[in-house]
Length: 147
Image (cartoon, rainbow, N blue to C red; front, side, top):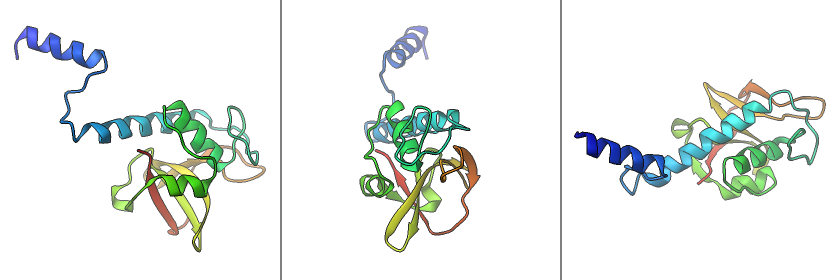
């Protein structure tokens, strides 16, 4: 690669361009938003649970995911069930850091967290607890990707 081509490519990237194939661009953007949302959720470690709270200092489960993705530049609806309905279903094998993890009781979604890798999530679990990193405790989960 010549110096001029290398500089042109770096300039293009620095100003928001992409050298990815057009079909790869949406996946790359989704991954970038997911990574940022995961980072935001982790930064809220220790924040207390409060029913109905969506930050910046207190959260319920869907409030944490809503807040984290909003800071990453994506809009999500308010409740865990609404977030489940809005995201694209993905398999456990396809899950990536930053994907949403939905917990089910029958057909009802009752909890949501952000996948952190190695079978763990960042979440705001219940009254009296705080935002924390925890191992997924059940197999009754599904995964959703924010597009």
